[in-house]
Length: 138
Image (cartoon, rainbow, N blue to C red; front, side, top):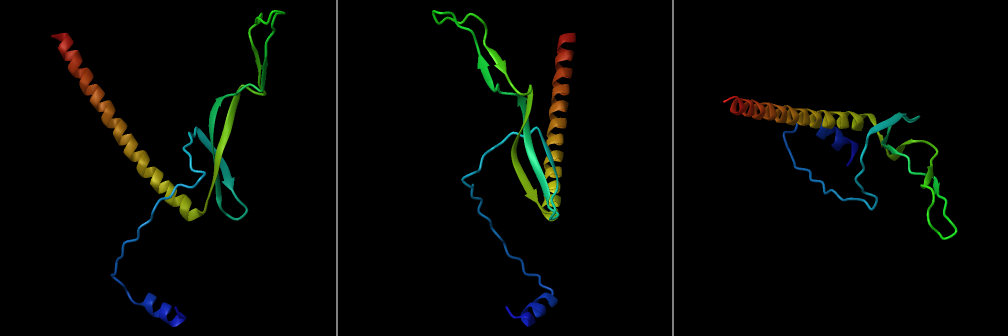
């Protein structure tokens, strides 16, 4: 497109709408992870790094146990680990400011929907508990 054409088109108001469709393709590295939290910060280029982690008990670095001359275990197995708890970093997501704001909006919508669902569930439980109390009091 020539510069004149671009300028002319952007100067004219357009009421045209068109549908844009995307196909979602899972990469070879796609997986579902559980996140207990995140750690991150700003990159030198002005992006936001978000490293998601899960928390769990440490898997032992090694274990040992004593056996008798006939091969029977005579003491319980001993486990040794560097620490008791681990934050396993699963993935680091890098987003620019526009994407971060879009992600925040998306999360806010999901959070509101989940909170509403939870309020409805509590109200239903309270309603059922009230009915049960009434039937027990009769």
